Amino acid sequence: MVDFIGWQRAKELARTEPVIFVEIMGEAPGARSLEVHVMSPGGVHLHEFERDDTGLVPLEDIQEVVGRIAASRKVRYAAICRAEDRWPPPWA
Image (cartoon, rainbow, N blue to C red; front, side, top):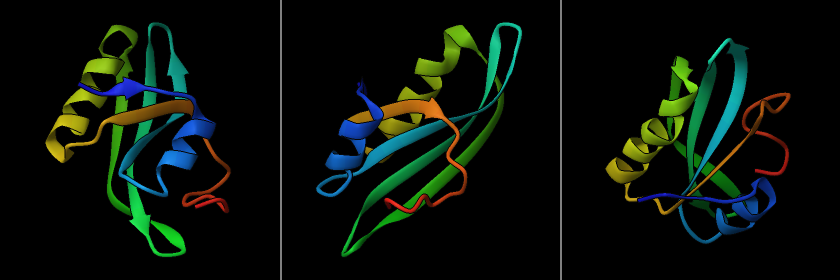
């Protein structure tokens, strides 16, 4: 099971363990389009070892979708936020 945490906390934890960053790329009534990034520590910078562009996901299914990705990669934490200007972002 994945724990959803704040974006800032996720950035801190990603320096020591894999974390999922979920960007909200777009919205429609009752759904969101997501870009899911599984990031892990990699020296000075973070390493992205999986990216999933989900397309529109019903709001009630977002946690389940992210949870499946987390379970498949054995990731404990995820954060959801509006899209960054670019990926990887400067803080990674």
